[in-house]
Image (cartoon, rainbow, N blue to C red; front, top):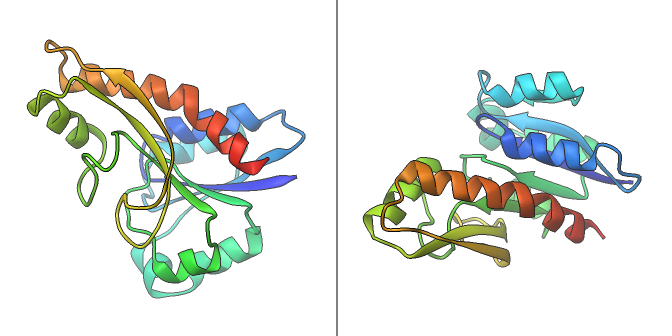
Length: 187
């Protein structure tokens, strides 16, 4: 059985989608969700889905071995960042080489980097009058949104689209593709 640990910071819609996708799988199990936000809606979702969830602070994440030790105990085959907003510490990445992936709501390398997440990305896409955008699933390295690209999916951006319209299109792409790519990576 392949083991997945998810990191999330907010509502957890991608985490819930992954948990439900693998719920009846004989090959993959989402064993834990970790969040840096003690008020994140993802904690409520995990409670409803009967999945272990913990919150942690910056000290536990990047200044001590607390989160690293949780991961070592969990022994994940894949660590999935699903709307996780903190930069991943290099000392944790070094313990899990090529086992940490992220989903980004744009076609990297465009609209990546510190502060480029969620609606910030969609507002920039609309402001720059892009004709297309999409999602990027990539490996995580020591820099924001610069790891090797695993998969991209595109959607059109209409001249009349608002940032919220773009967000909806991106959400649909995430729901469709993210579980499939995670599944492929674990095979």
